[in-house]
Amino acid sequence: MMCALRMRVQVIVYVLLLAILAGAATYLFIYYVVAGESPGLGYGGGMQRYVWVPMAAVPITFCVGLLAYLALFPEIKQESMAKPALPNEPEPLAAVKRVLKDEERKVFELLVSSGGKMLQRDISRQTGFSRVKTHRILYRLAARGIVTAEKHYNTYEITLADWLFPKK
Image 1: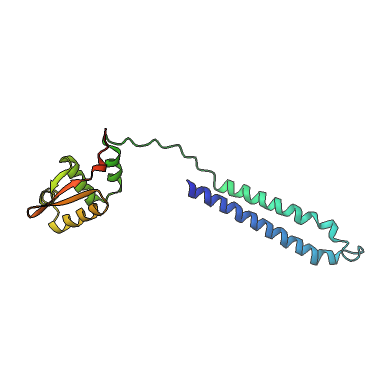
Image 2: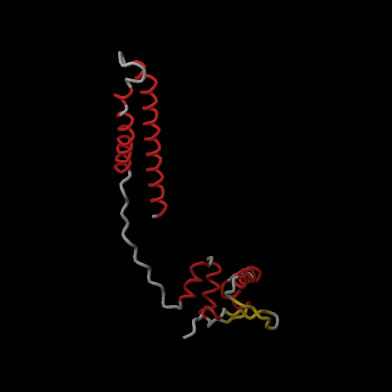
């Protein structure tokens, strides 16, 4: 919406600049060509008769250009979109879900459904990802502070961060 409005303003400014250039060109044309050809009025006398032309040409050109623009590009009316209903889960969980990639979201949802704590090997088995892929996904989640990993025998225990569950 904002981009379309900005584009409309830019077009109007360009039309105004074009109108000013057209008015200036008309003024210069009258000053150098028409004033010299005016019979019997002496030096510079003929220009006063034609001064109204550039002064009228600029606003008229601008108005015609603006009307043409508004006719060619009518304003698109957008109805306000209702916010989609979020599932019944705490806000931090929903916010994190929206920014995760598909594979990360799959691991995240598995952790949420299991109560927020799982072993890395179980995550790997239940998602069907390889051990390396699971490790990389969990590393990215840990780097963002979404999960923590603690050594648990020959695997890691993955726990969701406390800030994801608001205190009541």
